[in-house]
Length: 106
Image (cartoon, rainbow, N blue to C red; front, side, top):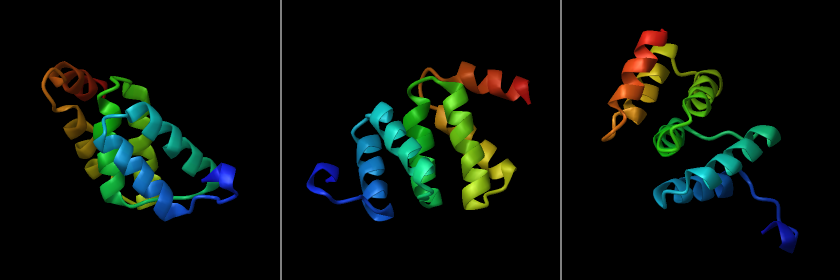
């Protein structure tokens, strides 16, 4: 898109980010997310939840925490709800230890 002279809008970024998450490409979805934040483009709660789930698979807790913090700030989600989504994203097979560690941090 960019090389053809078109700048993606919020809808295009949203679609690309969600598609990458569905495809299991959290690394690329995270790149699009960072680009959106830099440009001041935001998306809704549903995409944030998907991004949390997707990036939790990378096992980078700090990155997932940063996304949850953005969710609170940008989507005006309560910290309690964001923390719930954050923990839920790690509740996939093999991630229970991460959940327990996060609970101990709080």
